[in-house]
Picture (tube, rainbow, N blue to C red):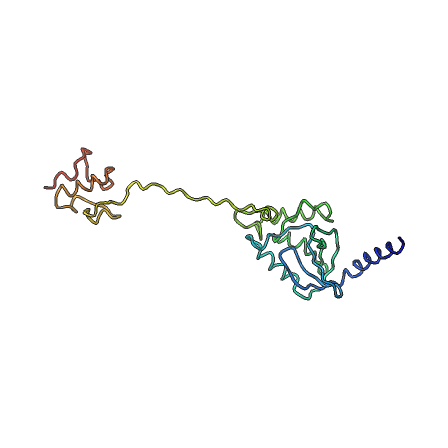
Length: 225
Protein backbone atom coordinates (compact mmCIF):
# COMPACT_ATOMS: atom_id res chain seq x y z
CA UNK A 1 0.00 0.00 0.00
CA UNK A 2 2.87 2.36 0.78
CA UNK A 3 4.42 1.72 -2.62
CA UNK A 4 1.12 2.49 -4.40
CA UNK A 5 0.67 5.70 -2.42
CA UNK A 6 4.20 6.82 -3.19
CA UNK A 7 3.75 6.09 -6.90
CA UNK A 8 0.48 8.05 -6.93
CA UNK A 9 2.15 11.01 -5.28
CA UNK A 10 5.03 10.84 -7.73
CA UNK A 11 2.57 10.83 -10.62
CA UNK A 12 0.79 13.92 -9.30
CA UNK A 13 4.10 15.61 -8.56
CA UNK A 14 5.35 14.80 -12.05
CA UNK A 15 2.35 16.54 -13.65
CA UNK A 16 2.55 19.54 -11.35
CA UNK A 17 6.31 19.96 -11.60
CA UNK A 18 6.22 19.81 -15.39
CA UNK A 19 3.36 22.30 -15.62
CA UNK A 20 5.77 24.86 -16.99
CA UNK A 21 7.20 22.54 -19.59
CA UNK A 22 4.35 21.57 -21.89
CA UNK A 23 5.05 22.16 -25.57
CA UNK A 24 2.19 22.66 -28.03
CA UNK A 25 2.21 20.06 -30.83
CA UNK A 26 -1.08 20.91 -32.53
CA UNK A 27 -4.47 22.59 -32.21
CA UNK A 28 -7.44 20.31 -32.85
CA UNK A 29 -10.24 22.86 -32.66
CA UNK A 30 -11.21 25.93 -30.67
CA UNK A 31 -10.89 24.23 -27.28
CA UNK A 32 -8.61 21.22 -27.81
CA UNK A 33 -4.83 21.02 -28.14
CA UNK A 34 -2.20 18.30 -28.13
CA UNK A 35 0.93 18.93 -26.09
CA UNK A 36 4.14 17.13 -25.27
CA UNK A 37 5.47 16.48 -21.80
CA UNK A 38 8.95 15.07 -22.16
CA UNK A 39 8.23 12.22 -24.62
CA UNK A 40 4.55 11.81 -23.72
CA UNK A 41 1.75 13.28 -25.85
CA UNK A 42 -1.26 14.59 -23.95
CA UNK A 43 -4.58 15.86 -25.29
CA UNK A 44 -5.75 18.93 -23.40
CA UNK A 45 -9.41 20.00 -23.34
CA UNK A 46 -9.57 23.64 -22.26
CA UNK A 47 -11.57 23.87 -19.05
CA UNK A 48 -14.55 26.14 -18.34
CA UNK A 49 -15.26 26.90 -22.01
CA UNK A 50 -16.87 25.39 -25.09
CA UNK A 51 -15.87 26.50 -28.58
CA UNK A 52 -18.06 26.09 -31.66
CA UNK A 53 -17.55 22.80 -33.47
CA UNK A 54 -15.40 22.81 -36.60
CA UNK A 55 -18.47 22.00 -38.70
CA UNK A 56 -20.63 24.83 -37.37
CA UNK A 57 -20.57 28.56 -38.13
CA UNK A 58 -17.80 30.22 -36.14
CA UNK A 59 -15.87 26.98 -35.66
CA UNK A 60 -13.11 27.71 -38.16
CA UNK A 61 -12.57 31.22 -36.78
CA UNK A 62 -12.33 29.86 -33.23
CA UNK A 63 -9.79 27.22 -34.25
CA UNK A 64 -7.70 29.73 -36.19
CA UNK A 65 -7.65 32.11 -33.23
CA UNK A 66 -6.39 29.38 -30.90
CA UNK A 67 -3.68 28.55 -33.43
CA UNK A 68 -2.64 32.21 -33.36
CA UNK A 69 -2.52 32.22 -29.57
CA UNK A 70 -0.71 28.88 -29.34
CA UNK A 71 1.54 28.29 -32.36
CA UNK A 72 3.23 24.91 -32.59
CA UNK A 73 6.24 24.88 -30.28
CA UNK A 74 4.78 27.30 -27.73
CA UNK A 75 5.66 26.41 -24.14
CA UNK A 76 2.65 26.67 -21.86
CA UNK A 77 1.56 26.10 -18.29
CA UNK A 78 -1.17 23.52 -17.74
CA UNK A 79 -3.26 23.53 -14.58
CA UNK A 80 -5.39 20.41 -14.51
CA UNK A 81 -8.89 20.65 -13.05
CA UNK A 82 -10.38 17.35 -14.21
CA UNK A 83 -10.36 14.50 -16.75
CA UNK A 84 -13.27 14.00 -19.14
CA UNK A 85 -15.01 10.83 -20.27
CA UNK A 86 -12.69 10.61 -23.28
CA UNK A 87 -9.62 10.49 -21.07
CA UNK A 88 -8.51 14.00 -21.95
CA UNK A 89 -6.91 16.31 -19.42
CA UNK A 90 -9.29 19.20 -18.70
CA UNK A 91 -7.17 22.18 -17.77
CA UNK A 92 -6.56 25.91 -17.59
CA UNK A 93 -3.85 26.83 -20.09
CA UNK A 94 -1.59 29.81 -19.58
CA UNK A 95 1.03 31.28 -21.89
CA UNK A 96 3.11 33.38 -19.58
CA UNK A 97 0.61 35.63 -17.80
CA UNK A 98 -2.08 35.13 -20.45
CA UNK A 99 -4.98 32.85 -19.52
CA UNK A 100 -5.90 31.28 -22.87
CA UNK A 101 -9.28 30.00 -21.68
CA UNK A 102 -10.38 33.43 -20.48
CA UNK A 103 -8.99 35.11 -23.59
CA UNK A 104 -11.12 32.98 -25.92
CA UNK A 105 -14.26 33.86 -23.95
CA UNK A 106 -13.30 37.54 -23.85
CA UNK A 107 -12.86 37.61 -27.63
CA UNK A 108 -16.12 35.77 -28.26
CA UNK A 109 -14.32 32.75 -29.74
CA UNK A 110 -15.75 30.42 -27.08
CA UNK A 111 -18.67 30.40 -24.67
CA UNK A 112 -18.73 29.53 -21.00
CA UNK A 113 -19.41 25.84 -20.37
CA UNK A 114 -21.77 26.45 -17.45
CA UNK A 115 -22.42 22.75 -16.84
CA UNK A 116 -18.82 22.34 -15.67
CA UNK A 117 -18.12 25.85 -14.42
CA UNK A 118 -18.23 24.83 -10.75
CA UNK A 119 -14.86 23.11 -11.15
CA UNK A 120 -13.24 26.19 -12.60
CA UNK A 121 -11.48 28.89 -10.62
CA UNK A 122 -12.56 32.45 -11.46
CA UNK A 123 -15.94 31.18 -12.65
CA UNK A 124 -17.56 34.58 -12.16
CA UNK A 125 -14.86 36.20 -14.30
CA UNK A 126 -15.75 33.88 -17.18
CA UNK A 127 -19.41 34.87 -16.95
CA UNK A 128 -18.60 38.58 -16.86
CA UNK A 129 -16.36 38.38 -19.93
CA UNK A 130 -18.93 36.31 -21.81
CA UNK A 131 -21.65 38.87 -21.05
CA UNK A 132 -19.52 41.68 -22.48
CA UNK A 133 -18.61 39.70 -25.61
CA UNK A 134 -22.27 38.83 -26.17
CA UNK A 135 -23.33 42.46 -25.79
CA UNK A 136 -20.69 43.52 -28.33
CA UNK A 137 -21.72 40.71 -30.71
CA UNK A 138 -18.12 39.74 -31.39
CA UNK A 139 -16.73 36.43 -32.60
CA UNK A 140 -19.17 33.56 -32.26
CA UNK A 141 -21.83 35.94 -30.90
CA UNK A 142 -22.05 37.61 -34.32
CA UNK A 143 -23.23 34.37 -35.97
CA UNK A 144 -26.76 34.52 -37.36
CA UNK A 145 -29.15 31.88 -35.97
CA UNK A 146 -26.58 31.04 -33.30
CA UNK A 147 -26.66 27.55 -31.83
CA UNK A 148 -24.62 26.69 -28.75
CA UNK A 149 -21.84 24.11 -29.30
CA UNK A 150 -23.44 21.48 -27.04
CA UNK A 151 -26.74 21.89 -28.89
CA UNK A 152 -24.96 21.52 -32.23
CA UNK A 153 -23.35 18.29 -31.03
CA UNK A 154 -26.81 16.97 -30.10
CA UNK A 155 -27.98 17.52 -33.68
CA UNK A 156 -29.86 20.82 -33.39
CA UNK A 157 -29.67 22.96 -36.54
CA UNK A 158 -31.10 26.36 -37.53
CA UNK A 159 -34.71 26.36 -38.74
CA UNK A 160 -34.78 27.56 -42.32
CA UNK A 161 -37.87 29.58 -43.22
CA UNK A 162 -38.95 28.82 -46.78
CA UNK A 163 -40.86 31.75 -48.28
CA UNK A 164 -44.31 30.92 -49.63
CA UNK A 165 -44.71 32.17 -53.19
CA UNK A 166 -47.34 34.87 -53.58
CA UNK A 167 -49.90 34.24 -56.27
CA UNK A 168 -49.44 36.60 -59.18
CA UNK A 169 -52.51 38.81 -59.44
CA UNK A 170 -51.63 39.51 -63.07
CA UNK A 171 -50.55 36.16 -64.50
CA UNK A 172 -48.81 36.10 -67.84
CA UNK A 173 -51.30 35.64 -70.66
CA UNK A 174 -51.63 32.18 -72.09
CA UNK A 175 -52.97 33.41 -75.42
CA UNK A 176 -50.05 33.76 -77.87
CA UNK A 177 -52.20 36.07 -80.05
CA UNK A 178 -52.13 38.85 -77.47
CA UNK A 179 -50.02 41.91 -78.25
CA UNK A 180 -46.50 42.26 -76.84
CA UNK A 181 -47.57 45.08 -74.50
CA UNK A 182 -49.18 42.45 -72.25
CA UNK A 183 -45.76 40.88 -71.50
CA UNK A 184 -44.77 43.03 -68.55
CA UNK A 185 -45.73 46.32 -70.19
CA UNK A 186 -48.76 48.56 -70.20
CA UNK A 187 -51.36 48.40 -72.97
CA UNK A 188 -53.31 51.41 -74.18
CA UNK A 189 -56.21 51.53 -76.59
CA UNK A 190 -53.82 52.96 -79.19
CA UNK A 191 -51.96 49.63 -79.18
CA UNK A 192 -54.92 47.91 -80.83
CA UNK A 193 -56.36 48.18 -84.33
CA UNK A 194 -59.79 46.85 -83.41
CA UNK A 195 -62.00 46.73 -80.35
CA UNK A 196 -61.98 42.95 -80.58
CA UNK A 197 -58.21 42.87 -79.98
CA UNK A 198 -58.57 45.06 -76.91
CA UNK A 199 -61.45 42.95 -75.68
CA UNK A 200 -59.30 39.80 -75.80
CA UNK A 201 -56.82 41.49 -73.45
CA UNK A 202 -59.58 42.57 -71.09
CA UNK A 203 -61.05 39.07 -71.10
CA UNK A 204 -57.59 37.64 -70.32
CA UNK A 205 -57.01 40.17 -67.53
CA UNK A 206 -60.51 40.67 -66.03
CA UNK A 207 -59.14 42.90 -63.26
CA UNK A 208 -58.18 45.33 -66.05
CA UNK A 209 -54.60 46.25 -65.01
CA UNK A 210 -54.21 48.23 -68.25
CA UNK A 211 -57.28 50.41 -67.71
CA UNK A 212 -58.93 49.48 -71.02
CA UNK A 213 -62.45 49.53 -69.56
CA UNK A 214 -62.75 53.08 -68.27
CA UNK A 215 -66.45 52.94 -67.41
CA UNK A 216 -66.34 49.42 -65.98
CA UNK A 217 -69.05 48.10 -68.26
CA UNK A 218 -67.05 45.09 -69.39
CA UNK A 219 -66.30 46.51 -72.84
CA UNK A 220 -62.73 47.50 -73.71
CA UNK A 221 -61.77 50.52 -75.81
CA UNK A 222 -65.28 51.24 -77.02
CA UNK A 223 -64.02 53.96 -79.40
CA UNK A 224 -62.18 51.42 -81.55
CA UNK A 225 -63.86 50.01 -84.67
